[in-house]
Length: 309
Image (cartoon, rainbow, N blue to C red; front, side):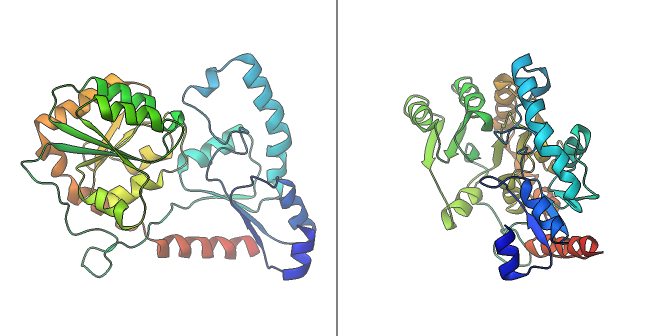
């Protein structure tokens, strides 16, 4: 890090994920007289996995003790940070409560790429392809991992037998085999595989609702914002940063974490009255109207000016 600073002579240092490095890079920058900005996209400073699962404060003694030792190295180094940023108020407050020592704090929400710019609805799509007559189309898009709530989602799908609903699961991960088996066995489930680019937005256009059943304290949940910007209401667990993006019953729904029956009951109710969720499309778009990359960039430029004093 010292060699890099000597070679390129930066005016400041902005760190994001520290995997493969360590908070020691902040100390190196401070020794060189450089302002330091850090954006916490996860819980890396609080847990070596980068994730904290719902109910983490009630975990066993050994795990709590290990995390406490881990934080004794990581959190004191935050004193070298001039401005600590996070995409959500939840994550900012969590770090401050547990011991972050930065000079200043800012919430800067992530932005999304402009889809269909110039169509009169900046950052959104004009319409979805779902129709009144079609069964309710529900989408999960993300990593197929336990902390993303895949077991919860699959358990909920088991309770949807006979319900006019189509659950599309898109992504890749260690639970891919489980998802494939569910798609073979349950009529309501289909596996779309890993998707990206135009195919990603095509899935949004075909969907009535995005489900985000994560059981960890997510800092933000970019896919939630992408869905809203495309006019797709969302159902998120009422924990972490994603819940800040949702007004219950307006642009989506909040569900309790780790409760597949609650998720299944929500989907059953919406399948019986699909226009309820389809009528939220305009609210979904409006709630993400300022979620632009340009807005995010402008916010960080202001932070840089603050850090430079």
